[in-house]
Length: 109
Image 1: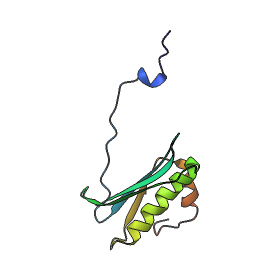
Image 2: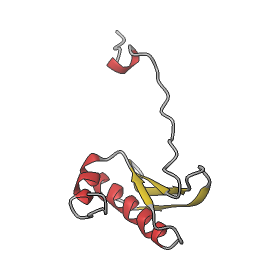
Image 3: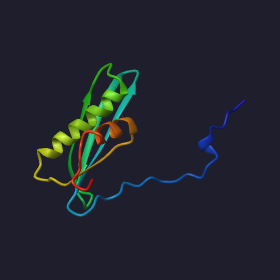
């Protein structure tokens, strides 16, 4: 018989990319893993949603966590090469985000 997965029974909702605060740029990063291998990618956008830069890399048989962390590092590295210094970082991997929060001290902490 057919199996209904739990998320099918809930109403669909759209996740919308949110603008960063004025003067900030936002890094969105993500890692992925498939049979072909792992990949890491990022996108930089300004506070108006305007595209600044993007990058990706293929990482062969890296772990998904390594791909996620590499995507974040590449995004931060690219952002630091721009003239912007107000940077927001957004990703969906809580392990990577929590790990980096313990290493970076922001001025408002």
